[in-house]
Image 1: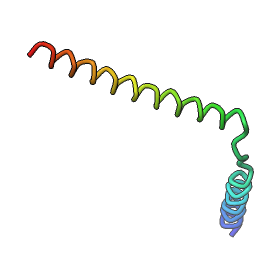
Image 2: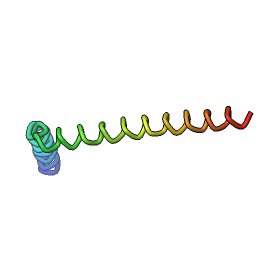
Image 3: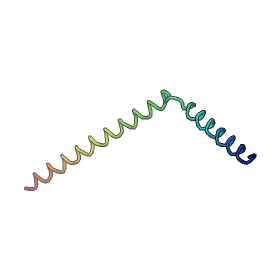
Image 4: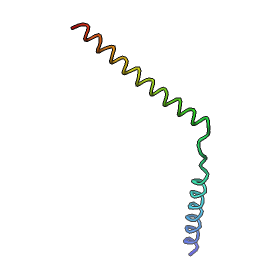
Length: 65
């Protein structure tokens, strides 16, 4: 019976710990939002540069013909 009580207390304590930690998550701050914006801008710029490179390659291929 004592072993069951220890197990029950352990399970309840772990549940409370998990519930408490999940409620402590903070929302992202201004620095994190700025970082995400920079990441998105870099990705967009990379895509545009890639498209420009493809257009240049296509123009070079057309010029050879």
